[in-house]
Image (cartoon, rainbow, N blue to C red; front, side, top):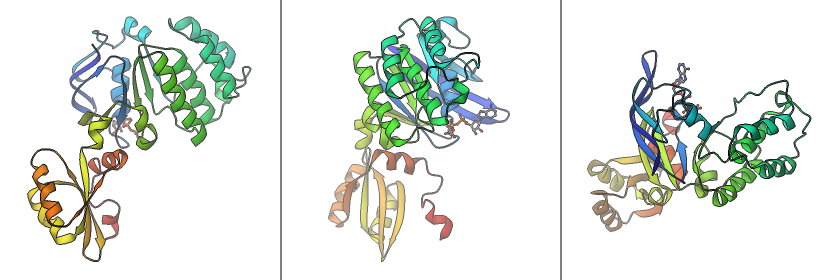
Length: 299
Ligand SMILES: Nc1ncnc2c1ncn2[C@@H]1O[C@H](COP(=O)(O)OP(=O)(O)OP(=O)(O)O)[C@@H](O)[C@H]1O
């Protein structure tokens, strides 16, 4: 069953499109990573999914309902980001108790165990927390709510590396005990890759790909060696990325599917070296504005 369906969804702010003609579905009980560069449209997409923002055109359903301002949808989803604000009149302890009244599947034991583990002070106020501690508290709410649709928009913002690692582990362990549909936006692909089943990659508001992490690992291959041999290859097959390595050598990234399969045989004959491409490198290359990367600024 699909929990989320986007069909041809666009969102305009003024004359510019934050999200363009986006279509995808999220199946029940999967963890999906939403990946894209700064300004790609991730937050806009997630806010539309949560029902906070109305699309300019297209159709969105969450649990088969239009999520915009829908009470039934809002009772079954949680949206966690670093801008969450809470009543300044309540302490962290009171906030956890209040959250427990709001979410039907609230796991109070998990919430308090995480709260103690991260050494949060129950008498403190949310506004008094550091940036990383705010994210940690928000994450506790997001996990303990056990909402059938859990949306995390850059949840680890401000967390140090150790807390981020703990968060990913807690998310995975809790998900295995309580499977649900989770979407997680992040720039730190390599950190979350092992946690994810699928990746939805968006670029300039448009869907670039939506594949399983396993498929993505096979999506492209790195080719290095003689520059003229690689340039010849580039005339027949579009390359995702290319970089001059100096001394007549080049590195390029090419898709492995379709016609490119023959090109792979060709590369071997040309004596070029083939290497796997890490998922985070691939995401970076396909969303890069310039094929030569930052080096092109200095060339
Ligand atoms: N309320 C708004 N009014 C006008 N433009 C907006 C608004 N919200 C977002 N945008 C624009 O929409 C585009 C997508 O923004 P969005 O915040 O969705 O991107 P993002 O992928 O979440 O970026 P980041 O990774 O930097 O957080 C950007 O060009 C942004 O300037």
